[in-house]
Amino acid sequence: MKIIPVILSGGAGTRLWPVSREGHPKPFMKLPDAETLIEKTYRRAIHLSNKLNGSQVVPEIVTVTNRDYYFMSRDELDKAGQVNGHFLLEPFGRNTAGAIAMAAYYVKHQFGPNTLMLILSADHLIQDEAALIQAVQQASEILSQQPNYLITFGIIPTGPETGFGYIRKGIELNQGFMVDTFVEKPNLATAQQYINSGEYVWNAGMFCFTADALLNELQVCAPEVSNPAKESWSGMTNQLDVNNKMIEIPGPLFQQVPDISIDYALMERSKHVAVVPSDMQWSDIGSWNAIRDLVAADGNNNRFYGEAIFVNSKNTFIQSEDRLVAAVGVDNMMIIDTPDALLVANPNQSQEVKQVVSLLKKSNHDSFKLHRTVMRPWGTYTVLEEGPGFKMKRIEVKPGARLSLQMHHHRSEHWVVVKGEALVINGDEEIIIKQNQSTYIPKGHRHRLENKTQSELALIEVQCGDYLGEDDIVRFEDNYGRVA
Image (cartoon, rainbow, N blue to C red; front, top):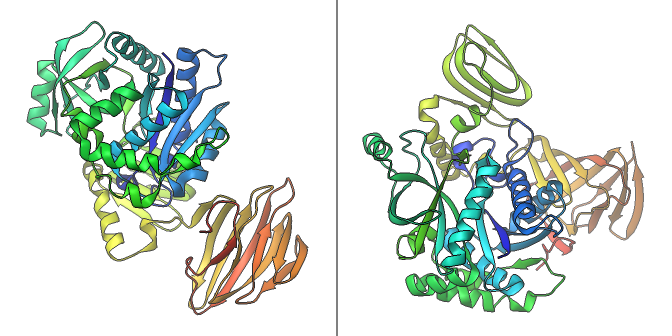
């Protein structure tokens, strides 16, 4: 049976603030080896597809993600290798039950009802891919005999972890076990009992089943999810085209899908769930402790990613990519430095970083959502400085990319090209601006910036006005679907 990897890419990763933020979430974080989690997931899915479907077939990968993350996801997929990418774009998150249901409809339509779906998370780390491939092969063998089963993957525990859910193994199968019980995150004593019994595995949140089996069982066990998901799919069929690999899920219909995980909606209710245990060196990268443990320690158990100096310090982790951080006389500490926010934490309370994000949201502070450098489909912008009535940015435009044709009600803009060559529409004019040249965009003027060359374009933008929010923008034309 053909296997189609389905990548779920949602969630903000609030425990990994200030690097993970709502506008640039956990899957797009770079790890110490300079690869993002989602890039690693895509590479893993490509390798797995080549192994199980045959290397002569171009891998097909389906990604379910928020519309705001489409262009970043596509860029990461392009870096991963030769692949046919398919994207289902959610207007807002509805948890994993809705996302997997929509993916099942798409896979059934695109590849057939008996196609195997391998559900992977974009923000997990798996260091033993051979073990993963073996586990998927075991799942495939179970499904060849019992095509109506739903397979979940369990991680063989390495210790009494309280941050994961557990699965109790039931009747043994040829390549796995029936699931006896799903268990919520336990306290330490209970977790130790689970480990001692040998009957439990960690719940990895990874699954394998046919598209039809998932949809049929969802209808039986969770019609409150199945019915609105089916209506959402019916509202998407007008977008289906052999050349269209980017499908938008309609908001008004998808709004009716309950916000519930696939575990609660289906796996805990179904009588046809089996588990395949594996020791694939899996981590959900759920806290800064997990990031720290990816870095080698020195003789004092200090670790760093970026630039750091330790003096009379031990058991300390520093991440700082943009500037040097020095730690003097500290013990048992984490220091995470970004251009606009600094986290200093006790590693024993790393799970509580999410409370910082909650407080930032309550105060409507920008740093819960955006970095100083913000990725856009056409490139990036970096806020250099701002104050009452002004804001300065560095704007970088990818070769061949252009911004929308737009206008601002409250601000004017000065553009100075510092690298490359810009094609600018300014009102009724179309002009070329080269390095060390500039133009002025009055308030209310339609304007557009484009890089028609194959080289990098960088410019400094100075905004002046009584309101400088990112929402002061009226788009008339756009290459990226941001005009209603």
